[in-house]
Image (cartoon, rainbow, N blue to C red; front, side, top):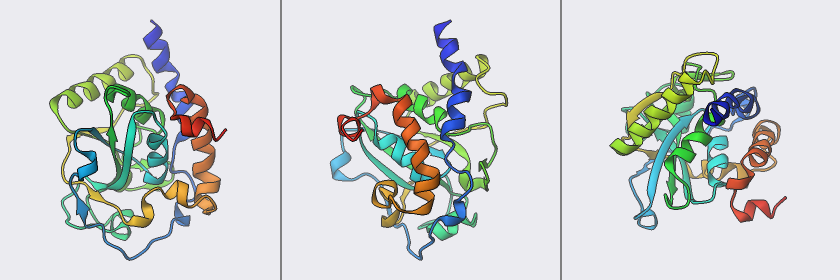
Length: 227
């Protein structure tokens, strides 16, 4: 019964955090390529999760604040094209989605807890869109890295559906993780590095602040000290 009530709270949280409302036109497009993919030496031994939930500037900011998360990378995945660029992906000229790859310590934060944050911070019921941002590049997707993640994600979505958490049906894709193309350097830590950007100030910042309030118990100490 307690779990069911927890799921029922999610629709109200979604109204606070949907990342891609108006303001998408404020994002800068640069002619750079994202040529990097694969694991790096400083992430070996960690678990990883990959999610797509609209604008990766916001998604990255949410997850990097969580205890147990050591690294979050914004990038492109789920498509066929090699070396995609932001201009190509954001204009819908590839089959990729904007996504984040999360490196985490499972003894500190579990994959299920990451799923909780993922479904609370975007709308998983709108097909190929988040707010006014329309296109397959803004689809909701979970890219699982092993059978355990696939099972956990599938069971979690089923529990949300059974509890009637959302008014509409969940359309989140559940697919195996493939090649992840790390986005251009200027996209990494965009929220932190560009506090005066109009999109960050008007769209992202209010949502991140509300996220910090609702998930306070899961925040890293460094973010608690900023308050």
